[in-house]
Length: 269
Image (cartoon, rainbow, N blue to C red; front, side, top):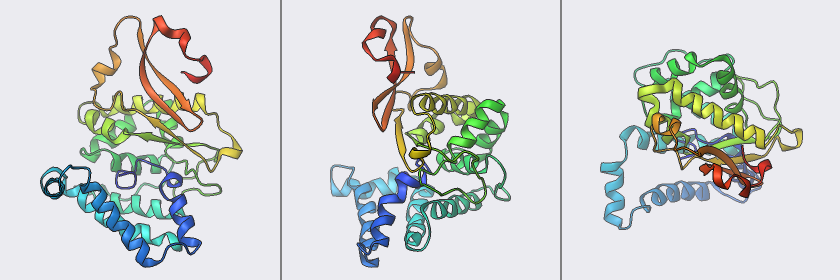
C-alpha cells in the first residue's frame, strides 16, 4: 500500500529490501516469492480464504489492484537502480496512465508533490491538482519540499530537486485515506490540513544533516475518516495536537486543555 498509493518516501519503502538484494541475500526467486507474499498478505486480512478471494473481486477497486500488480515490475529494478530512481519511475508511470489523461509529466518545483498527491487520492486527479494550485504560497511550498524528501542519503529526484536535502523525511500514515475522504468536496482544504501536519511534524523534528537518511512516521488515524468540518470543529476546551510518541513516531490526537500539563511541551505541537 505504501508504494501503490505513494504514501511513503523511497527510504522506508525500499531501503532495507534493496540492501538485501544488493548484498546477495535475495535471489530473483526470492523476490518473486516476496511479491506473492504481498498479494496473499493483502487477501489474508480477511478472516476466511473465500472472503480473501472476494476481497480482490468485490471490495478492491480494479484500478488499485491493477496498480498493485503492476508495481511488482518496478520493484524488481532495485538491483540496478536506487530507491529514489525506482520510486520516481513508478510515479511517472502512474501519472501517464491516469484516466482521463493529465498531459505531460510536471518537471518544475512541486512536481514530485503533484505526482504523489495524484497517486495518493482515489478521486479525480484534476480536483487534487486544482486544489494544489489554489493553496497559499506557504502551504504549497511545505508540500513541495516535504513530499520531495527521499529519506535516502545523497538521493534526490531527477525532476524536482529539493535545495535543502536534510532530514528526516516524513511518512504520513493514512494520508491517502484523508485525501480521498475530503478531496472531492474541498481539495484545497484537505491539502492545507496535510501541509499543517507536515509543518507541525517539522517543529518536532527540525532538519538535520545527520538525519538525511532517516524517516519518521506520523499517524493520522484520528482524523482519516473525518470530514473537514468535523476536523475544524472541536468541543470547547479541546484541540488537535501532534504528539511525539517515540524518536521516530508521532500521532495526531484530540487533547483536552484540562490535562494540558500531563504531556511534555517539547513533544506536543
